[in-house]
Length: 280
Ligand SMILES: NC(=O)c1ccc[n+]([C@@H]2O[C@H](COP(=O)([O-])OP(=O)(O)OC[C@H]3O[C@@H](n4cnc5c(N)ncnc54)[C@H](OP(=O)(O)O)[C@@H]3O)[C@@H](O)[C@H]2O)c1
Image 1 (cartoon, rainbow, N blue to C red):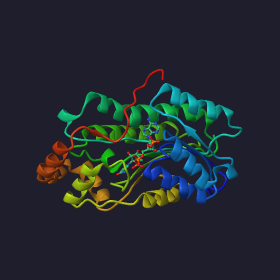
Image 2: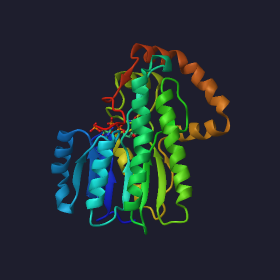
Image 3: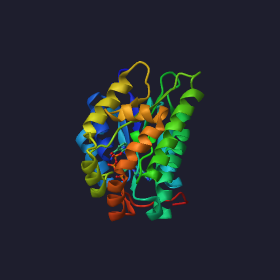
């Protein structure tokens, strides 16, 4: 697909990966509708990318609230043409041992990563181009490999992978395509100091958001989009985990003391202000 002139709705546009994706797609000449909560970041991005040149715009919306979803719905109704691509990139993380995770922080992760993504996708479906619409869900390598210290985040990303797979099959007799892209650790504010230190201690490779953004462009430019896991050896670990999970159990048991040390030192960190579904 040639992305020039395509209308693309992007959530999480004010985040590390989202901003890089927005820049990459703006360079392709796409018409961008960028969603985030941070008004200043949205304004700066809009100015930098000259969104209005291509009839693009920003939407300030907390998608984990009914009001935020309503804001997005109203914008979709007002559009003269269908959207070509929906990219679900908004997300929050939670690092810490489950027993230390506060219930409100757990709800926030599930509400934002799972419920909000599903509701927003459902809401966008009737506005997608019936002849060539695309839905891209930004998951995580933790959506295919349960990792100690991230049980809630993993639960949310496993859910998204299942959602993407089922929806792809549900829409298989239409021309709307669905794909799931799983980045590995990426250098953004999603990861607090504890996670950054943990990745260093474990020797985990960390990508720059621009690398993920380039992969998004490559994927969306294909004739048929497909699921993609980024990074080596993560791709191998995901494959081994799906066939011989006990091998990964063993490998992670060896890392558990280090993970516990960082997790308990920084328990209850949540990278985002908490939101719950409700009238506001
Ligand atoms: N960074 C990584 O290591 C990594 C690895 C694999 C997958 N991912 C996934 O990649 C995606 C982007 O992550 P990132 O690293 O770019 O994180 P980030 O820098 O923390 O950005 C998160 C984005 O999500 C938005 N967001 C969060 N809650 C929201 C809500 N309730 N309503 C509307 N927007 C909301 C934020 O908006 P505001 O800033 O405006 O609040 C921000 O734009 C996430 O889905 C994440 O799970 C990240």
